[in-house]
Length: 286
Image (cartoon, rainbow, N blue to C red):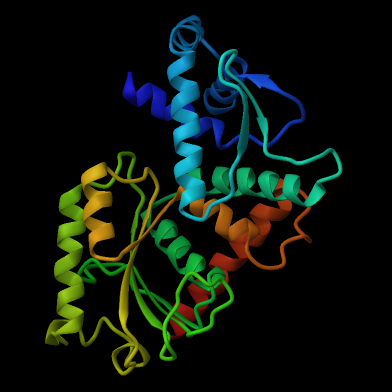
């Protein structure tokens, strides 16, 4: 049941917004049709049976996302009849609606990435959007679990990376998994972070000189397509790591910065591929 519930909740957040109040069962059916291309009788039976559970799970996921700085997706208008509406203040709130439409398009694009390598470049793109001044996506191969590196200045435009004047060095892992990241993956990343802090010799050829020579403090960052198990999240938070999932990633790449020129899904997709290509060129030249 939990895997089906999670798949439906994730699919709902990939829908573009529509106007008006909608019942949770109609919303979930719409999401499954977009995800699978059709809705089966068993899908309808499941949603009808567990619509209260789905409503609660959707609300909890939305609240967790907004608590972590994300954009709330819905207003939960009737907890008895299980109705909700997209979080658009009025029919004239075009900018908010455009953000939600771009986010849905960006998440669809991320879902369709061809392989892990593109997801690693997505990690680099996120750093650029969040204000990093230097970014490096490591070459394909055994790079000791390091997928991307970045330096964000002390006063980057996003406000996500704050320090007293030296900026922040970011060490990132991208996990294009079909299942949530487990605790052992975070624990293995702890060893990578300790090796960097201790200037281990085997990392000299992995870390660019601008990264090695910087006195800025280190912060770890995970980008995980399917999120995190509770134990992994707790361990990562205890170590001060930044945790992003695909919903957060889609929101960042499509909403941070001047993005109003992206007027439809085709514009969003073209823009994102152009950004990835630029990162590929810069990483190859590093």
